[in-house]
Image 1 (cartoon, one colour):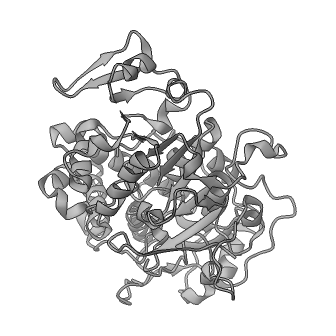
Image 2 (tube, helix red, strand yellow; image 1 turned 180 degrees about the vertical axis):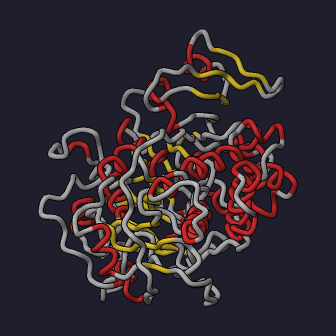
Length: 510
């Protein structure tokens, strides 16, 4: 997946508060949250239209049988990776860039990847140097400064001296109101001096950023820091973004440059899971269900071909009626009229289409690059119903919901039953009770955006999913056993077994 990275412009920051000196117990982070602000900002990432307009929410149950076209993202949606191999690889790539290109001492990163520390949805605050987790009201509920004080929740081994902030310290530093960058974060998924790590490819950056905070604090204590105060923490963000971009931009695959693509190309089966169950489901959607399927990915065709062949077999393209590469979903696909080009597999070339996408597809061309949602929607048909599955809670879900008429389904791998515990709690909440079934054993309850916004246990990630996705699930394999006519209530969340097992159950949030 080619990440869309933009450079952070220089900014002037207020001086950060003095760091607390004494360590605290991790149990402090589960204390009762502050009362929601009396005048809290608009909840949700649902739409750019007036929130009073109920038409901006797709509240009706969704059934695959009602869809004309069903689309899929590539990474972490169709293709599932062995995260115990992938995440440490991404972490090493980030660290190597910071050492080789930014001059950070290699000893700073002389720590293995910590699965028990990193979590999707954490925000790095460039003013304080904290990783923070927000609740549905946008208030900071958990904060951690640096890495060296945390415990490895997988092995139970202490990692050093520094720590998570106590509840009182969180309130003292951030107050009881919504976090200062909330509105900007919800609109742009990036604040002036903060970033949210929203995809699995970005999750390892949590640990890299925390280690850089440790190094900045160490230099400050020794009087060796070249930058003082909050500006030092803000400098972390552009370096992290540059590291991700360097190793994952799509052009690097053909050149075998960077640390990421060469490793995958050399041992693709080490990283990619086989997808026999999902393949059978896709075949059945087309054969028995009469559905038309499409692939829409930011990746280039060469990388897509490699990982899809590993997951689905060399004939994977026969599963789809249309494939679009380098869509740049966060970089213009849903905003501009950038024209489609045909991809010619025989010559590995790309050509402009003088007669447009619809005519080219009618002529039998099935693979394209770049393009825009308007032309694609015209191909689908004016009244076509479209459902899109994706893992990127911004590029696949929020933007798609805001700027198209498509339904969306969020694929969130952390919803697997056996996801390891972390000090941050479940990704969607601050309480494991959120995912407990009712006393009757029923899991068939919807969870609306309004309920997410009003829940003291819900995280801002849950609110975003409930506001913009029709439903969420840990893996496509989770729903392969459901009949085509099954109706998914808006906001319904599934939990299932890891992708290596063909076991699933539906769960709603109570």
